[in-house]
Length: 515
Image (cartoon, rainbow, N blue to C red; front, top):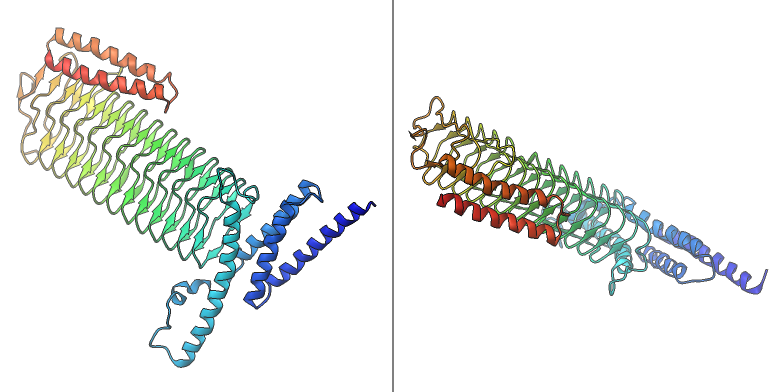
């Protein structure tokens, strides 16, 4: 054995001996000694990462073992961890006796000392995984497993880079937690966790799958302005405070269904390239979905108790809001639907507006209940190549109903409807006379659709020649829409074609009204 090899072996043996001593220190009853053990393990990892006296693979293995020991300590149970709320108080409860006060002082000291040790581990990991000058941290390439940990101290991993799978499944956070501005190159799992304080995952990039399902958030949580490349599973969560997902991009399927929101929910300005599954959720306060873009199938059936805003959205595929319930004002204005849109069998206790929308596919709004006013005005029902009906049959209207200034290029089916608060308005509507239209009144209604020449009063039907001209313009739009699906979604070219479709629809409406 050469002298250099002998020296190298001695160095490795020395590190391993220090590793064993550090583990023993972590088991000490003295928090100062435990903290020394933490520092010793951290320094050992740094040494293994910056040495050339052993094969790189062996150095990584030794460093990973030390990191795994630090994570195991964070995961280990601590009997006072559940007492976070009590020990967060500066003084014991005034009604307890002197012996209990003394015990409180002793336990609080133990609690704070252990919190300091574990927070020191978290800080050491954070400082070595944080991105600096666009480069991953020295420890970013290792695997971290915090499964089942109880964090009775604030957790900060903001700006971190995680190069391998990260598990934070089944954790409890008694204080704040900040994972914002981070990059995840491996799978990350936050599922089945309880977050007690303010929490942030925002401004992050997820290169692989992200799991945040089955969680309870007792404080406000921010997921916004994040980019998910391989899908998000955030189903069956409970949000007891505000939740903000705004401005996020989902490159794959997004599962956010079956959730309960007891604070305000902000899912506005999002982009979904895969399926967007938000069905079966309940929103107890305001819910914002406006200005979002859905390239894949959108499943959005929900229960909204206050204001719900779905305005200015674009759906490039089918959309389903069947059997939804809305109690407050609901806004669907100025939306564009390329695929089929299903609003059927829904109920609206507050006023609702669908005005200024464009339907390039089939639309189903039948069997709905509108207890207050509803506004469908100024919309385009193009119907797509199938020319299927704009189906609104069998609905009941407890307030004013405004269908005015809309253009129906295919069959309009508003039959078997009940109007209880006054006759509906069709002023300025235009209908195609070459298809079958249905305006029959349902039983039990107090007001009827008044027909003149087979069409609602205030509306008009095109002549046969005018309908033929409309058909020519409509086919031009259909060809433009068809070309859209030959272009990769989300690209500048795709956005350009979409803008041309909108402009063509505007020109189409102007031409039809001028006929």
